[in-house]
Image (cartoon, rainbow, N blue to C red; front, side, top):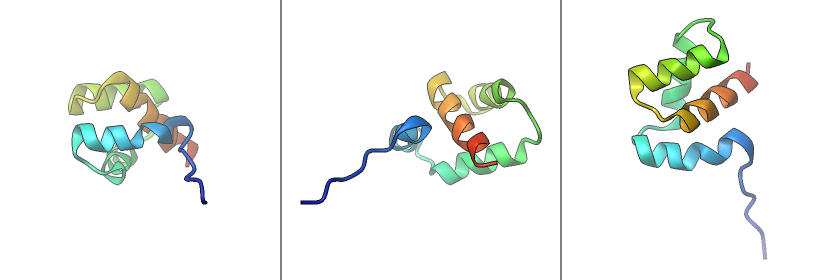
Length: 69
């Protein structure tokens, strides 16, 4: 029987983020990409203020985004 691997780190928040905000993760990555060269907390605050994303979800999105850069 095959075991499904559970996401770890920031990606573990992705299912909840997609369910809560009804947008795919790619949507949030595009927003972060278009924000320009900002620091981690600046990006977190952008998501919180302009898109009403909760702190934990915003932090997870930014961490995943910056890890791919």
